[in-house]
Length: 109
Image (tube, rainbow, N blue to C red):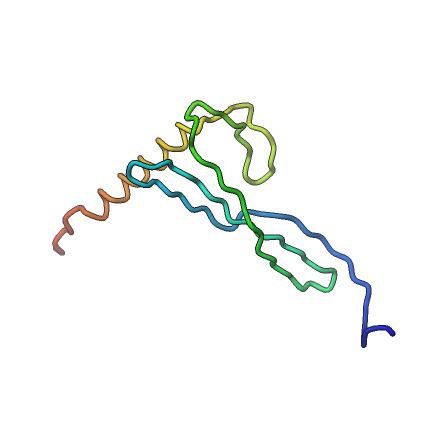
């Protein structure tokens, strides 16, 4: 027995990261977790988002490297970064944001 109004459809699907969580516990191991979702765009324009388990990576080896990719095209940029580079960038971003937040407000003129 066929399903009522059953239709064959086509489309595209891919997996993407939709969130990043950094855990940096005091006296603990820093960990990064990438939340993922599968996106399916059907030929009729309907989009289906399906949450996935994601990826978790502990920062156990600061010297470990990975290739840098263009976020728009996915092409290799011909350079690498280390886990330590990421840790330094995130720390520096946090400090810059915290300093800006904690700066005294300027009085209106």
